[in-house]
Structures are given as C-alpha cells and as structure tokens.
Length: 173
Image (cartoon, rainbow, N blue to C red):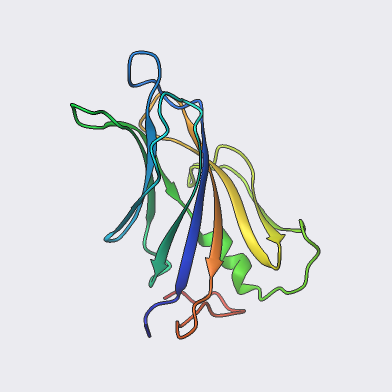
C-alpha cells in the first residue's frame, strides 16, 4: 500500500452519436484500461446514444500512467467491433486536487480545461466542487472512428493507509 496513492472513480455516463457497427445500430460498451487494469461497462443493446451510468474504479500508483478508454460493439458470433478510443488526461484534475481546497459552495468551478490538440476533449471540461469533493466532467471525442463522444466524470477517492496526493506542490510520483 505504500506506493498506492488512492482510487480514481470514472463514471461512464453516456455515449453520444456513436458509430453504427451492426445493420442499423450498435450494442456498445466501454473498456477503461490503465497498466494491467482493465474495467468494462455493461452492454447497451441497439443504441448509438447509450446511457451507461456505470462506475469503474482504478487503483492509482503512478499519476503518469496513461488511462485509455475504448468503445466496442458487442457481437455474438464475431469479434467485437472497435468504435473508437480516447485518452483520459487526469493531470488538470490532479492539479485541482493538490490545491487543498475545502468548503467551497456546491457547483463552484475550480478550473476550466479547453479542447486542444493534446487532449481528447470535445468541449470545455470543468473541475467542479460537488458535495464536498472536486469532480471533473468531460466529453471525450473518440479517435480512429467516424463519429462519437463519451461523457465521463472523474472523482478521486482517498483510501486510509494509502500514500495519497501531495497537497500544494506539483511533484509527480
């Protein structure tokens, strides 16, 4: 546990205008991967605008480890079709957590992150104070596919006995 920093809960909320991979629709699910961790949402049948609202939780030991998100179409008889992928950039979110903020009004925006060539954001993303914690809401534009976005929310979970995040500085592990 001494190298373990905490947990990152990724709420996979919904897909928007996902690619059609079956005759008229798709049966999408999301896979989030980081290092040797691989977590999966449930499959939503016949829907290119699925509502998952699934929570996936990663153990974080190194803040520099890349987090990937991939969308697939579940097929019964053949390999699952890839429907795009994106990288989740947690650095702006971690910067907000390191500020050590407390007792802000609910809904207070702590930081705004804008789409750029270096992230997969489809729209402005906000780190927001919500129910005593900072969460980050983001819409990820999928790459390697003709269309599609995935809405997610990040939330850090401190774990007793874990190293935790340093407050203040910008040191990386």
